[in-house]
Image 1 (tube, one colour):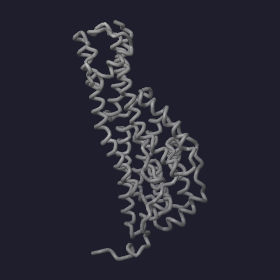
Image 2: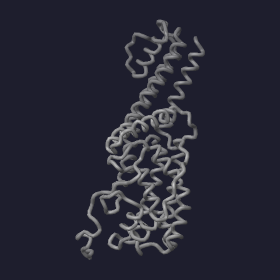
Image 3: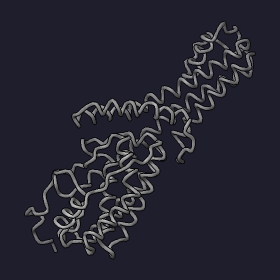
Image 4: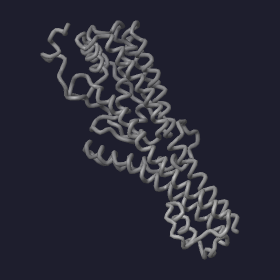
Length: 360
């Protein structure tokens, strides 16, 4: 018996199985950065993202980047299968004298490992001892367990993806243009859209979405790399847009801080956690110019919200964004997310339908 081969094979099998189970079943966030799945995504996503950036057309770029999520899951499954088969092949080669007909080399061990793992059972290679028979059953069980976990994992992953994306389709400012935080606030603060009560409900809904986002991405590590179905939409961009809207509310008003403050705090924790998860450091961000802020503050919000002077609101905005924007920009760069969010092409607030008096 070759003890070194057996020990090495068992170690490879255990690491592969634990990595697969931790990825497919565990709901906690990993603390280690050297598990095979973590290393795989670090080594593959950033080169693929660099390749995607080469496309100037936004639609083509999104098409290329959207291939990575589903393809990476298939490759990851193949790596788990290969890791287990290779590990068991070392075990069988180390125990080559324990077969009815001794194995002549490592290739024979690899062949036997493959037919056991996939439960093919040609019967041309037979274990000769009780220990090897038990180990063969263990390998077959590992293969069935891995396939079963993957089959159960995919519907859950798609469910989390659909829940995340459904909220993005509801993010609009009653315009077909790219949405800005100011335009978003204006559309909800209009009395015909519900006023401040509607804005409170909006931030409550998105705080819940942010919490579900954190939980979903902890349970499904690759979920963050699955792109949106529509060009110009991305969960990172949406989170940044809503958070900037919350920041404007916090800067402009003293008596309208509850839901907006909760959304801001939840977003800051989420964005910093995502950056830490993928190993992205915050970057320097140029502050929004006073002139740009003043234009939106005066012309778009009008008298709907602001209760502070423009200068006071601007200074508060700079302070709040300093805890958020550096991480957000780093995450946008890492995930190649769009920097603007496309709204849905729907009726404007001034449409005849919305101008009609409400039904009794």
